[in-house]
Length: 352
Image 1 (cartoon, rainbow, N blue to C red):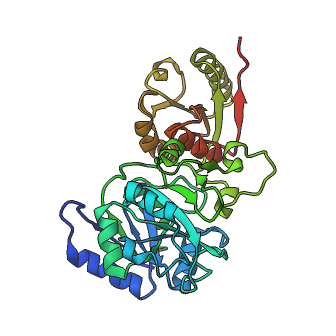
Image 2 (image 1 turned 90 degrees about the vertical axis):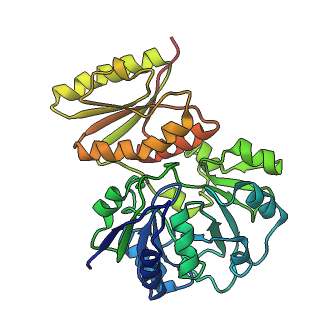
């Protein structure tokens, strides 16, 4: 398949490009496009065949639901059975933006889009290119992240091209994603709204809007033995090609431990990397030390994480060590992505 790659300016959108992309979607093709979170791989959400093509292009398990993207609230009633009051409260506060809500699906949404579930995940993005494309394509685009399944989500078009060129019809390059982490997912079909994936919209923000909100136990404790409520959460995601290990402890402990391990890896002839912060980066002796930003700015850390994982791949780094982050606020989302990227390999250093 020949993939057409087109640069598009989010501030001055070329309507001819959007029209071309929308025609591809309407005939059942696939278009990768920018959003404020990460790049998405779009297909017609109401076309089971299109959803099948998304799974095939990504190599994604077919029980991993796709998120349906809409451009306005008027599009919601026809794809869900009911809209609870909590949904209106959340939409008013966080849409358009990096939040996905889960509803009972209407019959017109194919099971191929929902991974065989009776529920549907819905998001209204804020990125101008995404919104223009959704509107032009008929109002409903199913779109997971635009990468091969299991790889770090792409925050720049060059990584979409690396993974999906020859697998999709078109890639729209709208520059780097601003947020850099996928949307927060909240399930409104439970008695108490439940966060299934942490993100830029934090548990504290959800609680401020709704009151009582729960966090899916498998996010907090992956060894709990409970099955994840979102099927996609049971698969390894975001993984670099090199082996990734997270190290928890005081800053001094972590730097000392990682440097010791780096020397061992170098003696074995393995190229090493460290995911550090501005506060600690100068203290490491790895072949490649990358700071995700200051610990005082978790939003910056979130926006850099996936790009850094991709850069280690570009540099053929075989062993990566990462500092741990706090498990509240945006830090919860950062740790969720790191844990899945590392296959939950964590070294916890005992207090001295």
